[in-house]
Image 1 (cartoon, one colour):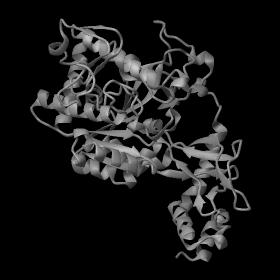
Image 2 (cartoon, rainbow, N blue to C red; image 1 turned 90 degrees about the horizontal axis):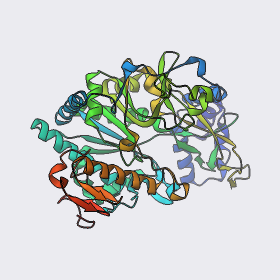
Image 3 (cartoon, rainbow, N blue to C red; image 1 turned 135 degrees about the vertical axis):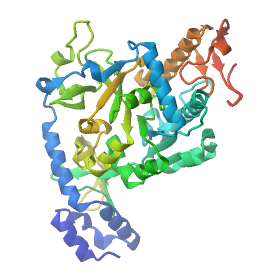
Image 4 (spheres, helix red, strand yellow; image 1 turned 45 degrees about the vertical axis):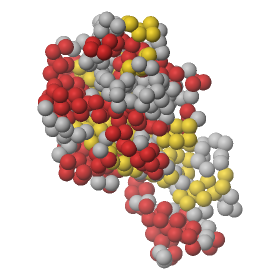
Length: 483
């Protein structure tokens, strides 16, 4: 057992000795828990984190208008406006990289479905499609389909490695779900789960909050925690060992996600990009979404609150918004760049601060939940590495084809199960009509095993008429639903 006096003196050096104030009252097991929590804190780093975080908190609210430039045309390709042969060449490149085993996917899946009234990992959520497929299943099947398409294009079967970042609360249920579903047909050795890190919660004076007498209050370190977690949990080493050169990273809650999109991968490979972002055109100047832009000569995501309404409303000569590149948490990284982040840049990542209501233990040892913010949580954001990229590019994709977020319950009326479902139905109907079929009605679903992005559908639908609800499935799909 750690010597109380030496622990107290280490904590006192960084002003955190209050963490031991209930020590005499703790059982042996509770003391072990508390010591483990304290050992997991990097005490030398803690003070630095708090100081950097408070600087960033004081900068909040500063408008960036004078330092802002839009992405230059040469750094942004628009799927809607690019020549088809160019997109086809990118797709071929992407499929080649997949068949060579050079592509991996990093899924940010740490969140619980709490806001959906669902107390499991969000990836296990079923939005109510006819197939009853969950977000995890849909994405797994898209990966399988893509491996097949790459094999058809090149004659060689390569595997896409799937790295799934969970939180400490979701790691076990996620793993159990994948095992129970036989990894959805993927090889188990190509699906690797790893845990997001956490950071302690602080009072405004820099003292770490106790969640219980024997537990430190902690919160997940944000999606920017992927870089540290990948290094610490051996994911960067695993990528090297497997020969993975390119990584597609995205969040779990976009039902339209083109997992490991070969067009995006191919574009980034041909541009020799260190990192890249997919963006959607902002729907309106006041849409509360961050935009990818240049600040002081460096690429970054500028939050909606960081620019004035006047700047948000600026338009180009063609009438399009000047700052229109809406960030959708959909990114590409070269593995070389990720290695550099792991070894150098991660320590320089910005820290973002949120004032929160954080449960705490009062002096009498009673756990209280405050009714107003009493401390801060610190987060890192995945896009804050853009500024370290030597070569950064972006791809503007059609929102109706690639972005529908699942954040709220249906009562919110947006970014909810019913909008996710209807966005998928609308896209699949568009795919069928593009391939020469007709769908009467709106409810229309196509299995990922049938098509990844609308390709090869004519043999199934051309000249045919279908009535909603319609479900175009493959022999590998379970037998419920309509065909």
